[in-house]
Image (cartoon, rainbow, N blue to C red):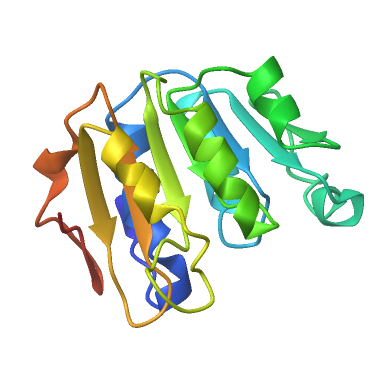
Length: 178
């Protein structure tokens, strides 16, 4: 499936990190913020490898766009507050953070800083549209890698899994850096 995570375009910089995170772990996957770029691809991966995927969104109209792909491995949930996710799902092997409003991502990263899994965060560029001021939280993690583009950046973080061994791997136009 690696080839499916080799898309080009600055907005999909999280693809390589998601793939590597899922390949480096076992167990459940969480998606905070559903979208056309991530939800179908995560669904396909989870279904193929029989892994539990839980997708969350606070917008019913947006969440319902993916009703046709949920299955025994993939459930989607409508939430009222992003803190609900952490309260009810305090751990997962992979946690993809792409929720809106983007400013909520700081709280989510803080909540999951002690998880044994891998966090993958979209829109981590230091300036521009994705400047959700998440970068100061990265120092709370032992391991960090990124995909940097002319558009959106993506970052993977972990305190338990040495993700720095991914550095230098290429996925199409993307390369994982420290």
